[in-house]
Structures are given as structure tokens and as C-alpha cells.
Length: 326
Image 1: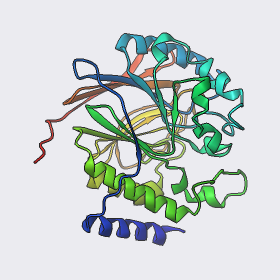
Image 2 (image 1 turned 45 degrees about the vertical axis):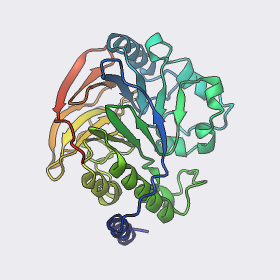
Image 3 (image 1 turned 120 degrees about the vertical axis):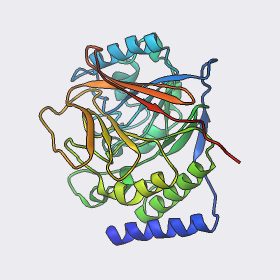
């Protein structure tokens, strides 16, 4: 279940791609861009602490920035409910950490969410249950799925099963229902993701997962993702990988990949004074609380990081010509 299996999965996936296999079973949602063809959104991760650790303050600033940008939706990069996910669909933590916290008018938009490792320590099926939408209609959470937002396709990936340590550690219980066995799950996920990426005609392709791929903070790089997921992203010319997991805000450009790695995992508790540099090009790092905004057109992406007071900490731009398809 280690490196040999991971490399085998990559090899089989490459062979299948060469033979023309295309299944793309990931569920797809559609969200229209604005009339002018643009899209605005916020990204926040690692937040669900019932308002504690400045979660409420971050939420307040999200509301203000969300109004200024007239956002279309919010993306959550996981660890939605601490410390151990939801117990059931009736768990009051859902309202205490989500509904009662993100109350600004601008945040009454769809929340497209992935699961984090802390979510897997609870009742995963409860957090995925559409019944939660009867409590709060904003909540959209699946293991892996696609969001077609016209100017960009977002590919949400469940990165938790990739982490081998989660399968063997005894300190925490992980809810692997509908996931085990690991190798089959990962194989099918990578196959479907590769197929969906190849079928996408969007000018921008962004992948969203919980775990870091490149990071200079507490968790560092996730080797399983670099071995398994990154080759699929590179093969399909993905532009951004967006994650949480490390409780910080960071932008990293890899030395061996054109993909930009973005961490927005500072929605509540932050990790101060944790910095482990690596060989990649670090463009920005902030070890406090905050969130990210994105403004997207067919050819330009502007993303910015904000702190708990709503101050702009960093802003970056990506430019691209329109894709040409035969």
C-alpha cells in the first residue's frame, strides 16, 4: 500500500489514457458567470470552530469583501467541522459552525465544499447527506465533483484517502465507508478526474483539495499527492491547485511544474511561527487567520489574501490567451 502501489496506479492510468478510456463519472454542477462573463468568489478553509479562534471575525470580513466583489459563491477547502466532523445530520455543530456564523447577505450563496481529515473523523455520510440542505440550502458537499462556472472549471478532489498514515494510525478513527479499499478508490478517482479534465473545454482549470501539495507550513508537501495526483494535473494543464489543511495563507510556484499552489486554510485557528522552507519559489506566506478572493474572466485571474481585519495582504494576477480547440 506504499510507493509501489502508487506508481502502479499511475502506470495503469497512463495506459488507460493511451487506449482512449473515457468515463468521467464525477457529478457536475453548473454555476453561471455574471452577464459580463466574469466570476467572483471567496475561498476559506479549516474554519468550523463554532465562532472560536476568530472564526466569527474572519466571517465578518468575508461578508464585507463578498459584498464589495458581488461574489457568486464560496469554496471551502475542508475541515469544515472540528474536531471530529459531524455526528449526524441533526448535529447542532452544523448550525453553530456554519449557519449561525456566515450570516452576511453576501454569503447567502452556494458553498461548494470538500472534506478534510477532521471531517473524516466524524460521520462522513452525515456531512454528505443532502438532508443538510433542508437546514441550510447553501451547503453543497461531495467527496469529488465538478463545478462548471463557464469561464472556469473547478475539479473538487477528495484527497483524504491518498494519505497512507490515516489508514494505519490508531489515535483517530476515520470513516472509510464507501471508500475502502483504498487502492480501488484512488484508481477510480484518478481515472474519472483524468477523463473529466481531458473533456473540459474551459480556458481555466482549477483543482480543489483539502491537503497541501506544496507547503512551507506545518504539514509540508504531501508525498502521496505529488506521486499520484500531480502527474494527472500536469498532463491536463491544470492552472491552480487550491487547498487548505495548513492553517495559513500561501502562494507557491513549483520549480518542476507550471501549476501555482494556493493555500487558504486560515478560517479560524492559525499556526504561528511554523515555517519550513523548501526549494520551491515562495511568493507569499502568512501564518495568521484570513481568507482568499478570486476574480476570474476568460483571460485574467486576480486572487488576493485578506487578514482577519479585511486588509489586503497580497494580490497576484494570472494571464492566459483563450484556448483554441479543433
